[in-house]
Image (cartoon, rainbow, N blue to C red; front, side, top):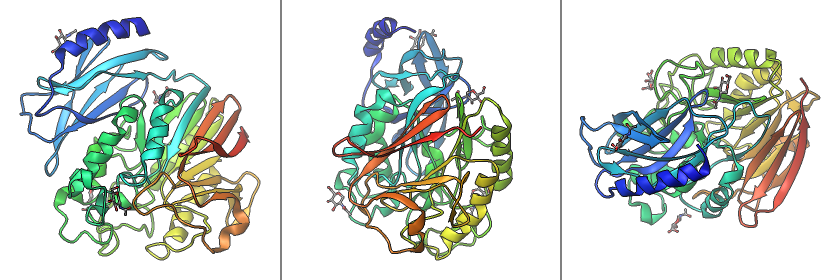
Length: 432
Ligand SMILES: *[C@@H]1O[C@H](CO)[C@@H](O)[C@H](O)[C@H]1NC(C)=O
Ligand SMILES: *[C@@H]1O[C@H](CO)[C@@H](O)[C@H](O)[C@H]1NC(C)=O
Ligand SMILES: *[C@@H]1O[C@H](CO)[C@@H](O)[C@H](O)[C@H]1NC(C)=O
Ligand SMILES: *[C@@H]1O[C@H](CO)[C@@H](O)[C@H](O)[C@H]1NC(C)=O
């Protein structure tokens, strides 16, 4: 669809708009396999079983499905057979209630030249500059990947942004509303983490069923787990991959489902019980093996939440860093993962290519990109033992990462949220 046609449709769409009760909130899109996207949103009112969620795009209508959580209704519409490279205008809704029109660009999946953004540890506090800059630059980014600690809704009772209200779902709603301008027009991908396990970061004592075991994270987003073969269950979300042009992207779960994971079905303190989503490491090995053997793949990028190496060693549970590194680092090394983008620590640290605590040619470059801005603030440099592996750090400013793939070269940049200036830049050449 051309831009001019989009504007014609815009006129038609405006006539349909019905706001108020049941109207779509927190509209966001995500990749859903080849030339497809999922459009998702929530409503706070029951829209009735007879009213399916829908999306109207180009001259087609699509219908979707709804799941109910504690006091929210989560709606998804999967839209397929889109034309690569086209700009689409859409509206979405449920029953007679409709969103405003949004526009997105369907990435050309064969493209070997594109730019994407990575953000980490961002909630409703201290995040405005990052959200504003990403929103302003959204046309540059083919998508955004959030490497965990998404909403900080589990901090709802510790001085969170008061305009949200005072419950877990209220904070999550505010986050998704603040993100709408960005995430309704650019696929917004998420990885799971400690702040999305259950309704309180300290313990799940008193948390309702619908706010435990990653439920909110799973219901409020729809990641391409089915499309990437990581699960046959809808809204699995916890691990998955997507392929764009000559680069393979894999999202891992550093909270559950690997030996000695921080979150287990028996966990009592520090997040609560969770996990049991399947054989993560088995799936990851297959997914990476296939990507590594594929001649059309020039780069493999992994995204997750917890770190392997950092100047700050304090963590909960105490040995989490060790266990995460033991589970994932050998797999990344074996299958030539070029870049691991993570968060968890609320600062920026770029590592040297490393393996087993040493600088290593052919090792994975780890980037801690956890300064998106959150109620816990930006964190200072730690006194840990990994300093010899750190090439660059920023412990003062909020920011996000930008990755530009251009054929056999990709450039990583760290962008400061307040000024938009580039604070760090490296070029990684394909080794395949
Ligand atoms: C791109 O194409 C590949 C190979 O056909 C497919 O596996 C992948 O899901 C597609 N990605 C998107 C975002 O459409
Ligand atoms: C799509 O749905 C709208 C609103 O319900 C309707 O007016 C329109 O005719 C439908 N278009 C198609 C192609 O079915
Ligand atoms: C979060 O933001 C609100 C509103 O700006 C403020 O009242 C509150 O103190 C902030 N909380 C933290 C922990 O910074
Ligand atoms: C978490 O959810 C998964 C998927 O539904 C389930 O298999 C697992 O048993 C749950 N874990 C806990 C601790 O309830």
